[in-house]
Image (cartoon, rainbow, N blue to C red; front, side):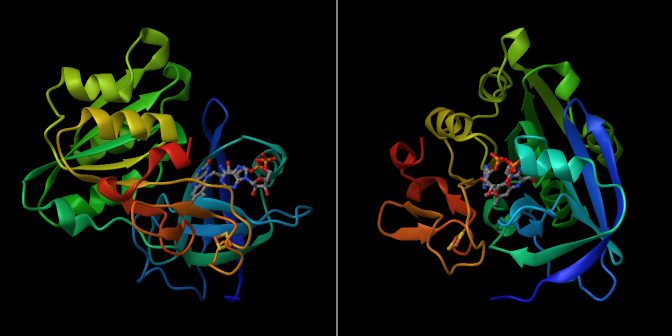
Amino acid sequence: MPESERLRIIENARIAEGSFRLTLSLEGASASAFRPGQFAEIAVPGFSLRRPLSFCGWDGGSVSFAYTVRGEGTAALSRMNEGELSVILPCGNGFDAKKGLSAHSVLVIGGGIGCAPLMPLIKELKALGAEPVAVFGFRDRSQTLFREELEQLGVRAVFAYDSEGRTAVSAMKDEGLDGLYFFSCGPAPMMRALCEASQAPGQCSLETRMGCGYGACMGCSVRLRDRMARVCKDGPVFEKEEIVWQSLL
Ligand SMILES: Cc1cc2nc3c(=O)[nH]c(=O)nc-3n(C[C@H](O)[C@H](O)[C@H](O)COP(=O)(O)OP(=O)(O)OC[C@H]3O[C@@H](n4cnc5c(N)ncnc54)[C@H](O)[C@@H]3O)c2cc1C
Ligand code: FES
């Protein structure tokens, strides 16, 4: 079992309706090997199973996560404003940002809180000289995340709202972005629709229920075209071509 570390809560602030940004101090731990798309297994006091949350950003002294309250564990987490958390990190393999770089423009497309791991990815793509275009979809305007951050990064960003009859995937088509290599994270039905609508290859970050979070229990196994894979250890990012959506929905 990988070692867990106790990381101090620096901030746990509301950033949209039902969503929070958790920032933890990295004293002792090192962010130098972190990759966009990797995640941490966070122990919320009072709950036996750790909760997986994707890295939303990091620097030399801290790592941050954006999360939506979904059940009791994330609700309890949202009420914690100080103290330490037991965390295992980094978990999984992240996005392979270099893969889409044969084209200058790449699409970064997310749904809801699935946009969180796409933020450090956008920074990495820019650092590699690519021009990422962000298409972020939310249920309604009150759930919008990362608008200011994308503006500060100078990235072309399209926001789509289900409540206004426009999804991330329909926005991608409307904007003529369906030929771009893509990186995606969001609800499985959204990413399945994306894979069907896009003419291009890409990578999707999958979400399954997890037990251990580090490859030991097989609880997160999914069927791919040619093999079984553990989302926590072999993923959570997989190539469009290898995903069997019927086994995930
Ligand atoms: C690789 C990965 C990265 C993730 N990154 C984020 C993120 O950045 N932000 C965010 O808001 N959410 C993220 N999630 C989903 C998040 O882990 C769940 O929303 C959270 O665990 C729900 O816990 P809960 O106690 O509130 O819900 P409950 O439904 O009460 O949880 C009950 C149990 O199921 C497990 N569980 C429930 N839903 C999920 C789920 N979707 N995935 C894995 N385990 C689950 C919990 O760990 C717990 O053991 C991620 C999931 C995965 C697999
Ligand atoms: S959650 Fe245990 S192997 Fe993936």
